Length: 139
Image (cartoon, rainbow, N blue to C red; front, side):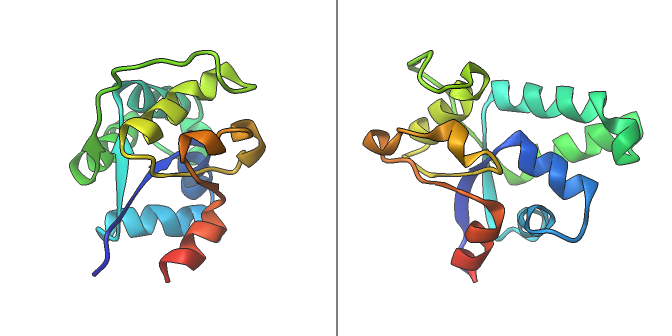
């Protein structure tokens, strides 16, 4: 099995938990099956936690479910430390940490629904794709 590594943006995590019908959910299933290794940083995990806790009723989750999801991601993922900052680099400064993680991880792909938020980063060698595109590339 060819295991791929990528940075999964928070909007993909949310969408994959919100609906089991789309490509975001397939990305999460591939993580669960060990086909994708999510790259993680402390900042990204805190963002995941904040979004899941804030939206847990909407997602139909209990507090223990949020903890289980985060623990599962930590067990299946690889942690990276960020040793450099370019902030602000992106149009939405809240996404800079996602870009920094992708570069620190060896210029891996960022999987997101907000591709335009990551415009003008080609010089960093990071690809940005939608969940649907990422799924097609892995099959």
